[in-house]
Length: 292
Image (cartoon, rainbow, N blue to C red; front, side):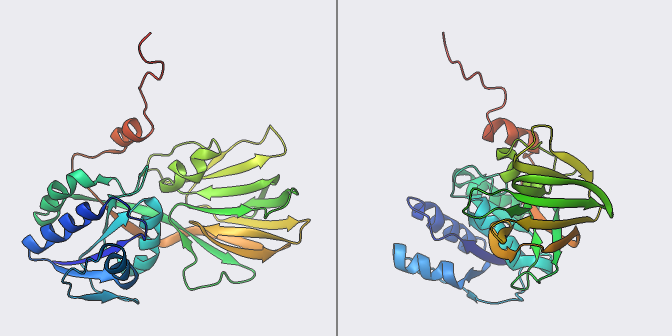
């Protein structure tokens, strides 16, 4: 089995779990490829240079599965590398919260057994595709979590005219506006009081960031809608962020967003489900008052 490993360059205190992962892969006779930047980090930070079949430094690459070591940010970066290549991604959490990277380091051995015995399951996650009047820099204009239109470092709000299937919805006067997928509903969207959406739902959500009007609320829309934005800014520019990859655009720019023509395959253990994750990660059902 050809396994690729991508990781973050912040793994303080996780070196034993990382070495354990490589030991298990060797035990299963896996052909291991490692992202070049991550391999260099392991070498410099931990003096750890595992035997690998090769280093990944460009696309495309032929792999059966990819392991993402880090938090959800690392998983998103890995997903951008994978793109249309249809390679499943397993997220091992060496970060903090972890909705996408939800395999705990203490469960690595059990998770790998399920991988090599093919007793895992796959979830397909929808992405957003952004087309702009000024092309987004770089070849990857997709987002697994959200597309965010945001003001820059100024007190002035931005105005975002929004159209759904060419029908005018409203003009948001706010610090920003998010268009999130179900996967991204537990990310930035959650922090601005947007709704949590079950991953298998065929919906997107529009969530304003600090809107000027208290009457404006998040709106759930079907995923087959086409969304158009026109953004005006008194500071003459603003930020567009795709899963945290941010670029500056001039005032007056227009954007067309739709469901992408491919999905990201996420590896899940058979005993995992989204509702368990909500209880564990967001502490649903926990009495915060403690003993009285």
